[in-house]
Length: 173
Length: 173
Image (cartoon, rainbow over all chains, first blue to last red; front, side, top):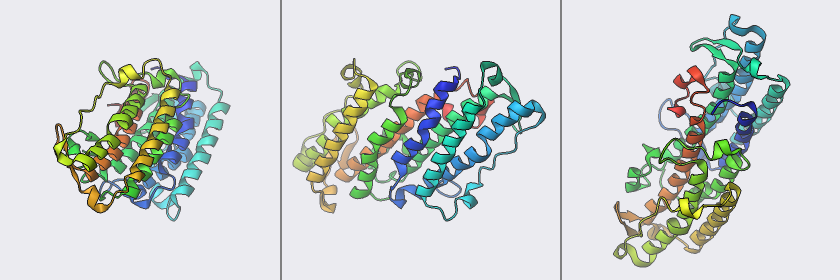
C-alpha cells in the first residue's frame, strides 16, 4: 500500500481505544510483567507511546515542513518513560496517551498536508534523508509494532502454562 | 505465570472489544489485505477465531471433563472459515465472535472448574496428552497470537512506505 493520509489516520485514531480495550483494569500480573532483564512491560510501552506523541511524530513533521534537511531531528529517547511514568497508574497513562493522540491528530489536520508536502525531506540523525510521508507511515507501523509487542509480552507469561501447545503457538518463542 | 482461571478470563473477555476497536469500520485496504499467497487477512483471522469458539475450546474442555483421555479431540479445521465466512461483512463477523465468546465464557463458568478438574487430562490428536489447564491457557495465548498476527499483517502493508525505517520497525520483516 502507498501511504495515504486518510487511511493512515484511521489506524492512528484507533490505537488509544485498542489499548484501552486490551489493558484497562487488567490485573497487574499481566500489565507489569516483562520478558526478562532490559525488556518492557505493557505498562512501559504505554509510557513510550506517550513520549512519541510529545517528542517524536508531530515535532519531527514540523521540523521537516519548517526547516527541511537543514535541521536534523532530535534523537528520540527510548528510555525517557521510565522516569516520566514513575508513580502513575496504567489508567492514568492510557488516558494521557488518548488525550495526546487526539491533540496530535488535530495538529496533523492543521498542517493541511498535500501530496507535494508529503514528499518534503528531513534528516534523521541515524537513518539519513527521509520524507514526511515515510515519517508518517512509520508512525502507523510504530503503533502496530507496539500493540504486537504488548500482546507478545502478555502471551510469554503463559509459555510454561500451555505445555505442548508451544509447538503451535509460536508467539511464546 | 501459572494458569489462573480468573486471570485468564480477563484476557478472553477483552478480545472482542480489542478487535472491535482495532478493526471495525476500517477501510478494506487494511482489513482484506494479507501477506501474500496462502496467508490470512485480518478478515480471515476473525473467521478463524469464530471457528475456535464453535469447535475448539469449550467443546474440547467438555471432552476432557466427560471422557478424559479415552476420546481424542476432533482435529481443528484451520481453513473452515474460508467457506463459513463467505458473504459476511467484517462487522457481521466481529459481532458473531463477540456473541460466541460471551456464550463460551458463560459455559466456562457453568463448568465450575476446581484446581483438581483443571489437572484432568485429555488426548490431543497430534500433541498427545494435555491437561485442561494447558488447553485453557492455550486459548488465551491463541487470542493474543492472532491479535499479533492481525497487527503484523496490517503493518506489512506499509513495508515500502516507511522507507529507511524498516531498520527499526522490525514488525514489517
